[in-house]
Image 1 (cartoon, rainbow, N blue to C red):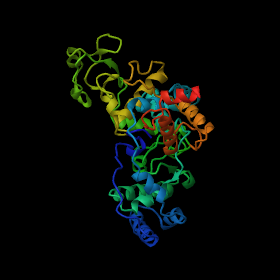
Image 2 (image 1 turned 30 degrees about the horizontal axis):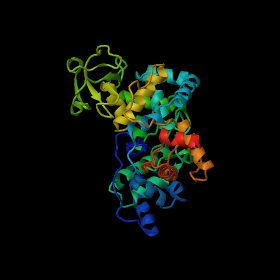
Image 3 (image 1 turned 60 degrees about the horizontal axis):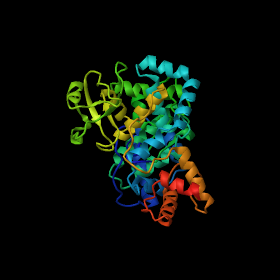
Image 4 (image 1 turned 30 degrees about the vertical axis):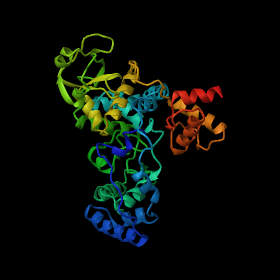
Length: 398
């Protein structure tokens, strides 16, 4: 995913680090035996442990993904275009209509508005369509038994997963997700699940995989604990004055609204600033790009995944689901970002020209980037591998 990756740092946990060595099979089995003893102390029965781990193996793919570095830094405008496009807004409104009661119940019970809940749902799993396919037990066992510097963290997440199986809230076959162990419609880590997941549909189980009611209620509960308040919004887009010192910007550098107003900051349409309490200014593309005033509610969104770009995607998507406009100012680029539909079009045109990029799904991986680089070279452009408007337009022209 674009940088910073929501999956690389779920719920504020940056899963960075390198591996020392890949253990032999015997070492893997020995490691599992040690974890079983620890799991037993946490209430996981021998039967549950043995059944859950009977057919797993050390997975080199998990290690590869944990070490993967992006080939290039994704510009904020590409990140936002992929996560907040017309398609996701339309899908989100349809999902909100279909599950209106579950969202209304979560809003009433936890005091978090339904549009923000739905925006997290949309960014995390595209409203339940993309849950991740990697088996949690195998992925977490691999990381726990590797030389990863956070192997103790992954060991705890593995034991938390086994406790979910022991309790019977979720079928073991449905416990799939990201390489790092995030799962469900709003992608909780297993330990976060134990702390904050709730039963939203009243069936006595906390199933954030197959129960939308449980997933959205659990997300609302997470944001409630993170001190979300419906009394104020997340913020809004602003216009920075000429010469604004972006070193003063940042989510943490909160000042009274009057302070920013005194510096010449206005709403994006030129109207005076409004609101109460300390607020910060985000300028993710620098002084010449769109800027945003953010409240403490933005911090609650940020805590779900420690990346300001991620928080901004959820914030803007929540606005668009409400019927408000998206980002109004122009991003500082002469090569427009592509929506997911446009990325699929790009991939289809690359395939038609003989490039192997896999399925045209709008997800830009290494094969798509290499194909784009080849096209860029042929056009005399810098070979960046970026899926931008110029490359797409060139392909459309043939």
